[in-house]
Length: 457
Image 1: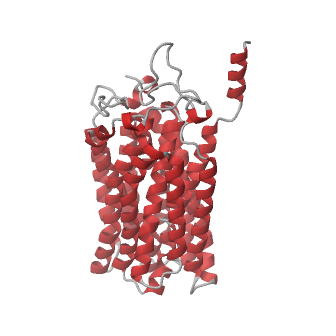
Image 2: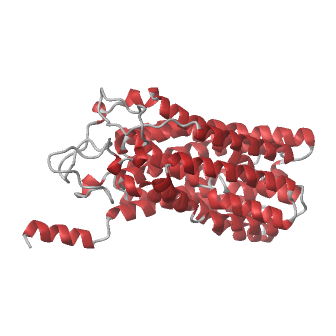
Image 3: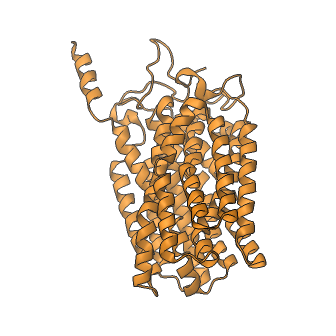
């Protein structure tokens, strides 16, 4: 064996650093979404009482958080493509952590709204770049799988806080929600520090190839999305040479954004008012509702992994259609079968598919625009996700105040999920693209990118 071959064999036996980066991305999702966003659902009843909020006000806090997310999601993705994911994600996670600490000290609706909005801004600035790492560190055949692992961070948070927060709230009924936000903020700041220390923006910085990247034939260019086969000393394409404007002009990217908006609108209604509906309307105890929240988390633990990997094999379009149909049924069951078997089945069905759409979207953005531009594309479609998320809670809360029940809002979520399935069914087929100026980012063709070997035409 020659010396270069021996070095290559030694590298293949070592743990690829992509797994380390993936673990850190999962922790960022844990803090940015699992704690900063979904933790609000469990704390909402206590916060409503302490701050004297009606349902529209409760929905307004969720909407403020999501508007903040919307404001920074696209910008965070673009900044990560230009200045590096490590920097942007760490700063975003720091902002989210500080804002959660301040949320715990809120005494009025306006102060809580301000801090929840800043929490959303930090979440958007950290979550989108972190998710884009899966397309940078993993090749096309493992991209969906990696994105599925990353989104499981939300599930881990639900599993952890589902049973623990109700106990804390019962032990400290007056200030338990404040202490919860302090704990959330402290953890987010810790994640920010670890991410700054350990994340690397691209495999080339360590002399590595993306994990699972197929070797190109001798003399050929790498698969679409990698501008050149870089070594540890060879920089990637300069940001100025990237086809920035074509990302925002691409019809396929806009279509994906519209589909993503349907997911944001529908699922956030279900997640925001899950505990409130169970406790306030159906008569469940806080602990019972927390246990169902934990059950949802357990079922969702492998959903991104399952559906992201499945989308690698059956195609992104088919996977999206199936997920949206399951969501519509889960939201409907929550209304029409309010007994324990029905709400349990609803939680299980949603859990099995909960974070699958973000995983598929992260993968499909990499398919369409290539790894280097994935943060920009993912950030752009997340604008649409944020619009849906911002509208959902406040509309559902207003409907609940008008009708005295969250049933109408939940049925609206089911209908919008069906629209998402229709949009996924109408997805055009596209070819993968290159990242240089002068090249189209998302054209149409006879085959979807995911079905092409190695992501090449």
